[in-house]
Amino acid sequence: MTDLFHRAPNAPLAERMRPATVADVVGQDHLLGPDMPLRAAFDAGVPHSMILWGPPGVGKTTLARLMANAFDREFIAISAVLGGVKDIREAMDQATRNLQRGRGTILFIDEIHRFNKAQQDALLPFVESGLVTFIGATTENPSFEVNSALLSRAQVHVLKPLQDDAVLAVLQRAVQREFSDREVSDEALTAIAGLADGDARRSLGLLEQALQSIHGPLDANSVRKAISGGLRRFDQGGDLFYDQISALHKSVRGSHPDAALYWLMRMLDGGADPLYLARRIVRMAWEDIGLADPRAMQIANDAATTYERLGSPEGELALAQAVIYLAVAPKSNAGYMAHKTAAAFVKTDRTREVPPHLRNAPTALMRELGYGKTYRYAHDEPQAYAAGETYFPDGLGEPGWYRPVDRGLEIKIGQRLDYLRKLDDDADSSDA
Image 1: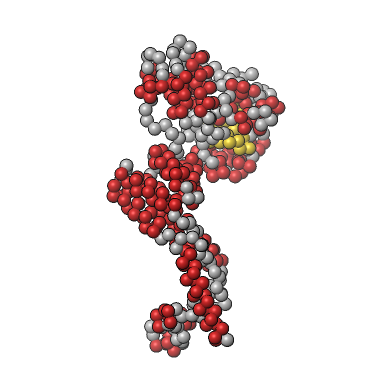
Image 2: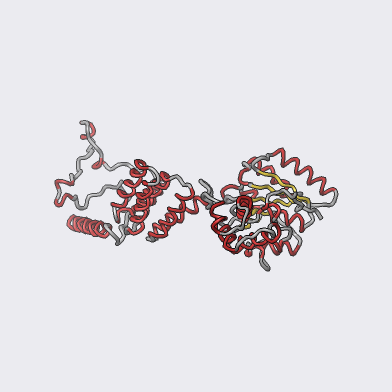
């Protein structure tokens, strides 16, 4: 059996502590628990092509190596950051030689999302023929980053960030195996587990860093002295980034100011561009508050201007208060939906003529053709409303795209529109 777990004594702690059997893997019970998908593959001894999707340090590379060991297959690893089509061809040549010797091959491609379309396409015939069992690892959403053809030939397994108790178990195992001569308190390991943010590899790196920096007993205070800096996971422009902005937007829409503040602070703390957040906050005001409270747009715009003038950290207060206001404001997506519906209609509808009475008539010829002849100037009409007048092309009718909700200012807007429609109905009745 191929041994992929022989490590040099001076290798990083995270490498020395990499699980050698599937029983040593901590976490991912939804995949490795009894009768779960990956456990079933291990138990059956039959690997399948797959993509392991999850944040850093949750076991993607470890699982790929464990499969090669468990299924007695050659393991070829390619980093998509450094590799290309040439490396794929060399790997396929090696896999062919392995097959001639009666051994299968697992081809592991780390960060598969960094391969371009041509590089991913180069894998297809070899995965399809079964020459290799393909295992890709990615921190990005494969539905966006992996070609559909390759995605259809591989099962996607989602790995989750490790809970603190799972990270703590990894740390305790490391201390027992590698640092039994050091005095390390449970509080110190708990502090490191919290700082690791669900990343086992990071937790082991932090433990190693702390033990190298502190020569005496390791407790929670000494951990804080040895380790500094923001350690929360954040990937500007990546999948986690868009998950968080989605959570912020949905918290505002759901009228929950505390949750909205939490996600805003998470993103600012993680390094998100505050000006990007300001633009998204303005978007939220127009999409989810709309005309139910027009002040929301003004406050959102003022917050963006304030941040541009003050910068961080002072300007972040304006963004926070705008988020609070948007969260507690009455909600309406009536304007947003009217815009979408009208845009979709116009995109698919035929070109309709502007009715003559709505056309401008700056020349004598246009006046002779009747342009603007029957137009009724609203300010000359009772209540400045030309009851019964139509402003749509002939034959289109009233589509009713804008439907005010019964919240905030749109209550009054709805009442006003109902009154005007009644004037139209009365005018139509009198004409009849």
